[in-house]
Image 1 (cartoon, rainbow, N blue to C red):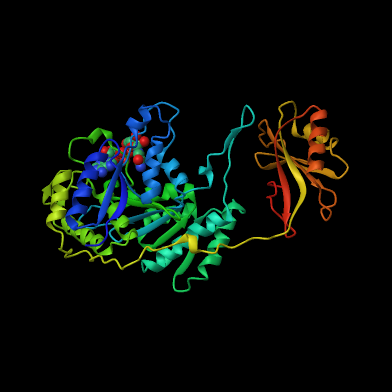
Image 2 (tube, rainbow, N blue to C red; image 1 turned 90 degrees about the horizontal axis):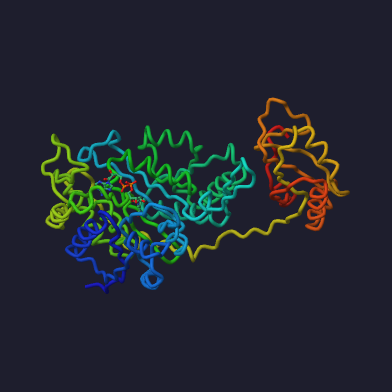
Length: 484
Ligand code: NAD
């Protein structure tokens, strides 16, 4: 018998305990070599006054085992509770969310019989960095942060995953026709990394048409890699059209730790009734076994599970009177899988996992370094202003420019309104006023930025934030206003 791998298990809330019990029974019957440590998470921890939903002592187990099999939790109503998933992802550095979305036609009803897509979503940055501000009475902002190393890591992970799992194509979803810098760098890095994997086809789509194609013809996709928000949305679209939310599993992978969980929530309305489908958690547990290099047990369980589906033994969420043979509850479903351990599906392809298939070790990657020359060439000063039209603001503000700077454009919600704005442009109380160096070759210093702010303040304007304008290797590191 192989040495047991320690893992941390949390039973969670709602249907969590019953699907975890079913899953662990199958794992044990299949001979998975696991040493299980159990921790408490979720509702009861929140209600003990711990706003993160997890006790400090539980981190100790997670840091030791580095492998987390997690049931869904219920987030209590009312404010002040932090998302346990976001906390876990960030604390453990789980940068990749991997979600296979497969259809099991004709055994699970779906309009897309040939779907077999893996969505790889960046998990740590983008709009989910949680940096939001309200700066004026009318305007709220959320920062979208895309980093070069963050993008390179997730894209490299996607190609490594594709190579190890014998996938043929990786598609990148971006919106770089609009967000030329943030989504632009993601796309550029995708193109660069793709050249290192010549055997894998690489292509890109704009997220809107990509999502439409995914919802309409998912069979054209293989692996999709994308940033956090887009990935969040498309992975739900993909899971929904593949059949049932009850059968989707996911892995969250980091440099050193990994977390495996079903994609669904705690389904409180069906909790405690032995009717929930344990398949989402079971499939997540299978990818955990692959991750900890127990591929034979993983394959054995996966094939028994496929055979159970083929035999028409279904829980209520996927049961169809004309095609299913037996309606079963959570534990009876687990029993049916256990009975079939050692069997393989007759119609659907048999699954085999190779040794070390997911031994992707991001700590060994040498991420690209960037030593570009950087020069300060101006500043965008944002004002809270509602005392007059754009023309008046621009004219008054241009008088405040210090010797080395000039006001070149004022925009409102990204549209140029000064000089030569159009009266039709709707303006809020949030204005971006761009001061550029008269001599960009020479550049300016932060002291000049502060002097400019002092001059604006002295003229009676209220500035609410600034963004420095830089050139990188002689090229602007900022977008132009629409119409500039
Ligand atoms: P949900 O996924 O719990 O339920 C959505 C629907 O799917 C419900 O009709 C439910 O009965 C059904 N369903 C879900 N899992 C099923 C299964 N295994 N078998 C059969 N049917 C299943 O989503 P929700 O209702 O929006 O959220 C309920 C709670 O779960 C909330 O407190 C939410 O915050 C939490 N949640 C937790 C996680 C997590 O821990 N990862 C994820 C999502 C939601």
